[in-house]
Length: 96
Image (tube, rainbow, N blue to C red; front, top):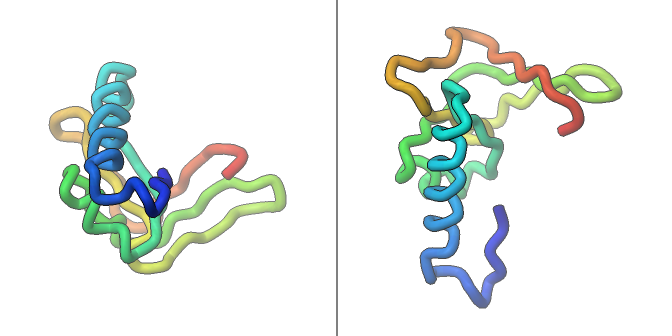
């Protein structure tokens, strides 16, 4: 998500995240996951996201991409009791 500099601080990001989470909950997945820059993690923490502690492997056309930067991958349950696996998390999705 990107909010242009002239529109930052007006709550647009908060509204987009809240709406996306509401729609995701209605669609039925157990968790939400996102990739962000570490300096933006606080915004997502305010919406219940937590950092994925271990590396994340993502399928790509040229092979598997490992994302292991601190704060780069965050997740949040969308259903009660949902959780991510301990250790390495693999995202089976193309393309990224």
